[in-house]
Image 1 (cartoon, helix red, strand yellow):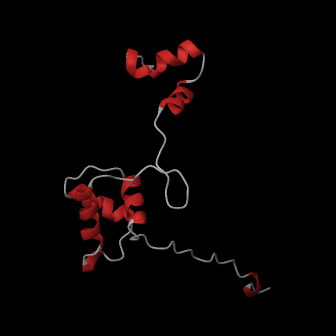
Image 2 (tube, rainbow, N blue to C red):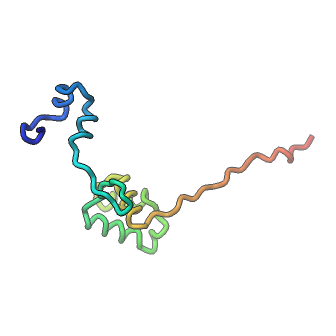
Image 3 (cartoon, helix red, strand yellow):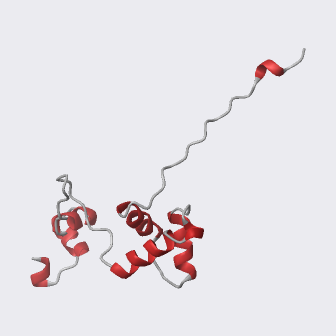
Length: 114
C-alpha cells in the first residue's frame, strides 16, 4: 500500500494510531536466513570495502589492530564508513581478535604495618 500510493511511514503511523517505529518494522522486507536459521541482514555488499579492510588487517604492521584502528586507517584513506560496519565486516571475515580481559587486582591489606 505504501509503495502504491507513496505514503510516508509517519503518515501511516498517524492513520493507524501506532508508533512510526512499529509501522517501519511491519513494512520492511524480511532479512534472509543464515545457515543456522537466524535472520540476518548482510553486513556490506561492497566488495571493494571488504578487500580494503582485508588488506589493511593483513599488513605486517597492522596484524594486531582491532576494528577501531582499521576504521581510523580507512578514514585517513578518505573512506567514509561507520565504525560498527568495520567491526561487523571484520567479525564476518574472521579478522577480529578475542577480547583480552585483565584480572582486577585487589588491594593487599596484609602489608599494612601497625
